[in-house]
Length: 250
Length: 250
DNA sequence: TCCTCCGTGCCACATTGTGGAACGCTATGC
DNA sequence: GCATAGCGTTCCACAATGTGGCACGGAGGA
Image (cartoon, rainbow over all chains, first blue to last red; front, top):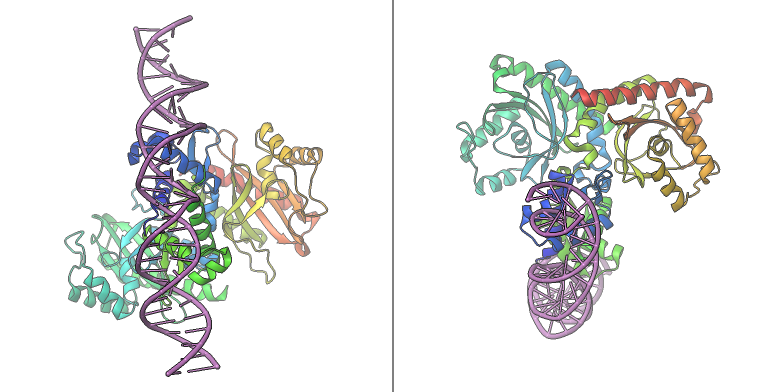
């Protein structure tokens, strides 16, 4: 089950996305592949509408708009996306910190799908499309807290990587934390994944109680204040509930 | 320059996006391809992280979140996207009609990249990722008005399809209309592409005067009012300028 | 229980993609 | 102004690669 050419084409597509606008030569160096192979792949992707030549420098390639029609199931019809937008802005206005909307990808990782920035000169930064581990982040644990027990067990069985001193790496610590999240209605991350990054998150649940996504307030440790935590948690939780309600109303 | 397997894989990927969550059998019927071929392709796309098995029915496939990391150049770093968000919401609040943010794809078509909905029971609907022809829509002509003359000529040479009675299909009509757009600062579409759909659009220009994107107010004909047009045009134009200014500020 | 339908796995075949080499162009430097 | 270097592009013989008919096993219905 190989399909080498397909796998390679997708890798090249991803590389173009990261480095656009990019030339054939740059890509050959990046992959160590023959020029003709890369060139052929680019032309094929272009013919399929996924790539296009830059308007100013026609030997540079960039991602075509076609990819926008291909969206993850969680965003289908973009009801979640549209529903989340205004509550996220209000939350940002209330706390002036960067707000993230994230969805779980097959319970393997979380993916940032939208962001509203704060106005501080120093901010946390996560690009749309960035991924993060489930057990080590506020956003991930907000989802895990409402996931089936079996899925959490499976995740634990695969092993919990340590990213910082406070990262929960054994099953018991994680389970206790998830109990706390369910009790409080929000999850917290203090330097457990990226150093100096803290976050407070809450899950957006569908009608059946399945976690679809999360909203999170993300800030540098320098602005994290334990005393503000209950207040922050309440705001984030309310925002999550409002998004869930709006999603159904639309 | 073929790469049949790559082209086919991308087609299948797009089909999955449209029909997710979808089974192998449904796809074989859709394409008339052997089961094993479709199956192999799905497994490959899955291994590459672009597809995921549905959590509830593991024989159904859906798009994975990985695709979000692959974004068109116009949205890179999402500066345009983020800059547009709040002005779009304000415009929606001012007119209570659906607002679209669109980008041109290689001067071949316009692609909807973001949307803010109005509250009316009857609305126009365009999904994110939807495309539309340049000559027949307000959004397309807002871009064409600021595109190089040569590009407009090329477009005309390829032929202007007629979608409705009022669609501009000859070069002269189109050129006069583009002159008007430049003079007024906004473009108008009244049933020229989709029946019963009207829109007013303005281009978002970069520092060099190149059109990057458009903002548009879209409404059913029943709510279109010629007397409101100058007012609408002014609002849309101001929003476009505000987005352009914010994009540079960030 | 039998039958059908569907997702999955297998393998001989030849179609398909591969990549080294050569071409033509532009920019740089002597 | 000529030589050189570096680039994107094109070509083609070779064989590695994907193909698709077939068969398996399990789920659901009659």
